[in-house]
Image (tube, rainbow, N blue to C red; front, top):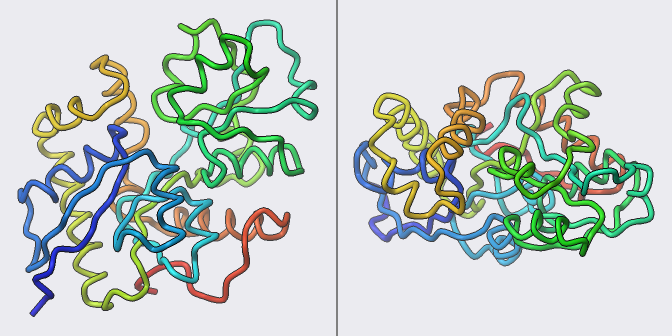
Length: 281
């Protein structure tokens, strides 16, 4: 029998996360004897808390998962991977990308995949300034920073801030590797029993399937937490970041994660680890 003590589950307020976890946390799919205490937060806050193992199950940036591989393992369901969905570098109109090497760059947290991908793109550790992701576009628009790396809904709204796209980091990754870009995943603490990890992974997959089958069921929950309340933007966000990879990583998805970690470690941008990446491999 599973442990009846509720497990701590944390994920971001972004529409892709509230969409995929809606059925799971509202009891719309079988929990197989498990219960959850749920926390919602900005993904970089979750990355920082994971350093101390704060939550047993947590959405984390892939950059953070790689650096915390000794204490957390990745589940194969619930991940955000894809094509045409990577972070974007934006700037005010007329800004030359060549200035980026000497500029401070606003990023959505130092442990985010966006920040690590920026380092891979530049070939060096960037002068990154962390801030909450929805503050980046206003800061760049005001001239506080020449460049910003944006994620989530920002890819649909940066034009309204008078900003131009100067580089698509996801497209760069795809051109370099031919693989989908791994953005974030669901990690479990390694001290959880293996059978518990298996149930969690399967429940997440069922929750995503429920969301696909009942797309309107989670709308109120998503709007309750979304930073951007425009329905069209929310729908575009979910369509972009929730896909077959979210249901379960296939061979291409697993290859993308492994290559991302390998390349980041080769460049000295991620800690090494002898632990296996996936919880159930």
